Each structure stands twice: as C-alpha cells, then as structure tokens.
Length: 164
Image (cartoon, rainbow, N blue to C red; front, side, top):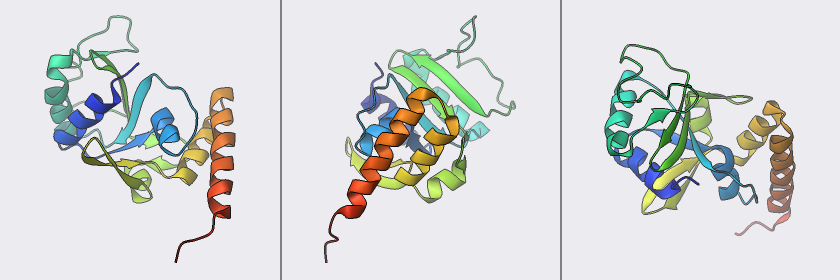
C-alpha cells in the first residue's frame, strides 16, 4: 500500500503542479474503491522531472514497468519527453500521467479539478464527472464498476437539497 500522505506532500512541497486521479480520487469522491498506488496527472516537463527526482531521491525511485528496474534518478535523460512515469519507491507506487484517457491533457484535467484540504495542503482531485468519463473510457471491468458507483454518488448528490 502506498503512503498517500508522504507521496502527495513530497509532490506538493516540491512545487509540482498535479491533480490526483485514479483510485484515491475515486475514494475522495466517496467510492469504496481499493487501490494500492497513487496516480496523478501532471506536466512532465524537464523542470518537473528535476523537482520529482529531488523530492524522491531518498525514497529510491525505480521504473516499475521495466524488467531491469533502472533508477529514476539516472533515467531518463533530462531531454527525453515523457508521456507517463510509473515508479516504485520506498513510499509506495506512484504513477504520473500527462493525460487522462477520456478527458484530455493535464491542463484540461486541472481546469475542472476540485480542491480539498489534505494533510495541511490544498490538493486538487479530478472532478467527479471527469473521473466517471475516464473510468468509462478505460473500459476495464474494475473501472466500469467504479464508474457505476461514481454515477450513483453523482445522482445522490444531485438529489440533495441545495443550501441557500
């Protein structure tokens, strides 16, 4: 299980602009999803890659989808463009995506993100509607189950009386 608190604090304190997506975002919106990794959407610019390397330096980040498990501190080179990064760290698993299937790129995801206080920091999460779109676009059984639950949550919220 990933240390959500530590991973998000490190991203936030490093000055990386990100939006929480995936299973933890579903939980934030009220779903009963189970997740083991922290997924965020962020611009993977050379500057952000440098900030991320520094933020995770003592957590021994390695590329989780590579058989060789090279250190993220060494690979990729600074000038290599990235669309995603999947890392194992001493703090848990972290996925960084530049776009979200069914929604769009980081700027689009960030535009409708919702803010909340978590661990003394303002954190943004993908909006409920965007998360439903993403889960449905992925189309995997586990995502469709979460999308169904999120639609029920959205319907329940819509039926609640509005406060003046």
